[in-house]
Image 1 (cartoon, rainbow, N blue to C red):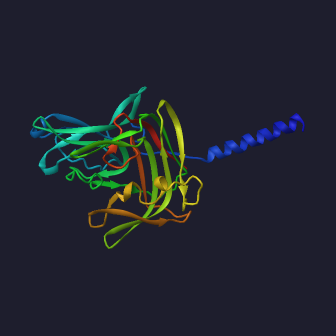
Image 2: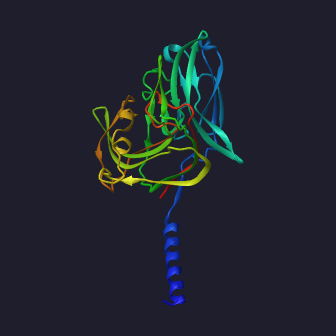
Length: 319
């Protein structure tokens, strides 16, 4: 083969690659650049010491003083930072916050053991993984025993992205130990907690007040080790249709009804009900909703490793 022919083949290959790349479109998720945050100041009840706690919401820049429920009307993002008022006692907990990154900002999600002291005595400990998700929180949270009961998981969404793209770095404890802290019970158990991100595209409908869904698209990625340097433009492919026959399929990661089927949504009567996934959609079906979660811990509520952290920036879709 002559050098001229080799050069021609290489040029053709480069042109094809450039054309394929040019056909892709990157679409930022609103506020996914982490540059705007609403800052809230919540005064806890005197029974808990009466301190003022600072909470953050990924939303248009604002400063909100006073124990007011956040409406989550001008942002698609929900957050693990909670204003709770069980039994009329005001409490706030912050596990996700903005952090400087160069000239701008990123989000930092931490797994934290939140301690609630009444009259100087330790009464309650709760493990919370710092989390950002598409959806909203119904505030103030009234039921401390049902962490998903006040969370409307997912937002309306009819597109079919190829992948999710983001910048990230992690801090992950090497210990094979984690803590289960639920109200009055705290114990250490075996297990390795790690940050994760997942996307579930769903086709939802309602029958007799219940919400059902078929899974249209799936992506779930965990980060088992510390990554100290920023990983820019990290890309995670979304797989469509029934993925149970794929060689990489793992039931504990990719199956229907994740997180023990705890996700809820608001039905047409304004009631929060469980979202029940009943099967896999066809490869070409259009979704009605998307669930996107970025979290410092991969275990269900109450579990986690307090050493873990997940930094996130520039979250966007690839088409």
